[in-house]
Structure formats: C-alpha cells, structure tokens
Amino acid sequence: MREPERLHVDPFGNLQVCQGISLGNVFKRSLKDICEAYDPDSHPIIGPLLKGGPVELARVYALPHNEGYADACHFCFEARLALRKRFPRILNPDQMYGGQEMEPEK
Image 1 (cartoon, rainbow, N blue to C red):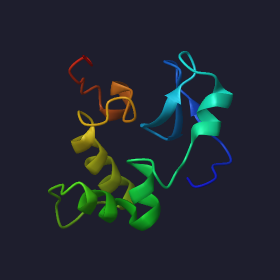
Image 2: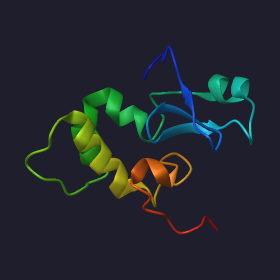
Image 3: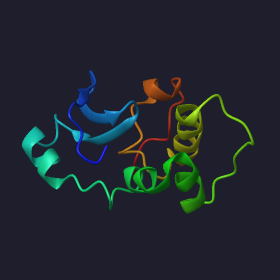
C-alpha cells in the first residue's frame, strides 16, 4: 500500500488500492492527479494500516472489536465497515461492503 504496483478501477470510477479503499474517483479527477496526491502515511485508513495493520486502525479510531477473526483481512473489513459513515469518499462503493448503503453525502 505504500507504493502500490497495481490499482483497481471499479465500475463507478473509484481507484482502489485494496477492495473497498478508494484513493479517488477517476470520473471526478484525473488518474495522474489522484496518484500524485497519494500520501499513504497521512491517509486516514492506509496510514494506520501501514503502521500496525487492522489492530492499529481499530486502536486509532477506538473501534469495538471481537477477540477472533478469520484473518487480518476479515478484521480490516469489519473495522472499515464501522468507519464507512465517517469516511464515505474513501470506503466505497456500497457493493464492496455487502450492499450496505450509507446515507447520501450532504
């Protein structure tokens, strides 16, 4: 995630570094602009993940969590699911989170 070698563009134009973590939307900003602006350490989701994985993400945002998860990706998904309303432009689209829609941005 610090220097991604490949990214995914979903059908909605979201440039994703990992499923459900958007760096921006190519329908709204150029790919070049999105990539040039990418600062993984200051990114509100990626920064904590780079520092300490999903445990750090949960700690930084004081998220409740269980004792056991299938793996780190499962824990990360659950943490991001809890943060979706706080970071709707980053944690999208709804389809990546089981179709759980958020309230529209105001």
